[in-house]
Image (tube, rainbow over all chains, first blue to last red; front, side, top):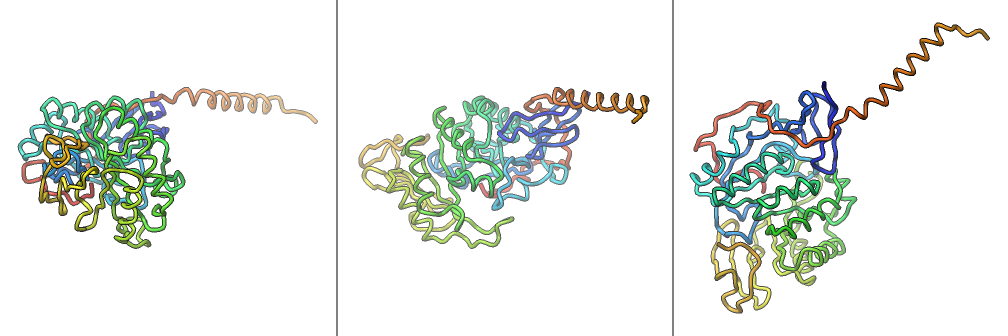
Length: 325
Length: 60
């Protein structure tokens, strides 16, 4: 019998008729069985510097095997990877890379960790979960790059295998999430707190889009929430927007906006605040919040200096949040 | 006004069936998280050492 199914993975709770998929395009009702059709079939497999995720507080300068299948449960108008995130599996060529082959493939290519990234790894949940189990068994690390729009129960099962996560906090307003991303804010905030409390190294990215989420007030509220609910040590990346996909009418984010946001975040008390998607002299450096020493000096994806010793500042011995060996 | 009994019965039967179908339908919705079944619906291309691209073109 062909049942209509309701997917319980994410807060969208899609009701899926036989032969159809959920909003994510990859969870398909095949004869009454909900099937993740991209399991083992990534459309992108790359070797990236970990700084590209961006993850700045885990093994700086290391390589990470980055994989993605098509599909996303959000539909952001500014998506930078819309050609794969908003694509159908039918029209996207993919490799066959089953979870058990991932650790070997990562090691062959000199990678010390595996990232589930580019699209939304939480919609190809089963593949991410099994791959991350296999990766841990091989003593490699797992990195999740996500919008964080998932229900708590599946998330609780996955997070014990995740070492580091960069989670997008796309704005600090529910109306932005509804209008621009076709989602809501609350589940994302819940994911951020849950990941932090379950011991994942969490970094947050906030892409600043001119006129949509770049007001002083919104940035301040966002920073206060991070400081109060996650901790001041959680790194925050302000990322530069470029006109993409369905938001080509807006200009790229000016450097002055990114610097303003960074100043607000530092004034709020956050320790590690970065500026990304743009070349600056010191926007990507990790600086000791106690004594001001440059702990990690970065230029693009290159590490110019790594001064952290045993997870601490060599000048004042302050502990630096992160995984350093 | 005279009522056509046969038509009336047909209408009654039709509306009962529709009502019943409407009631049954929600119970046919199963709640689920996906199972893993291979069978990628798109083209599958070989993955060898040359396939991996150093520094991917995608953001993230």
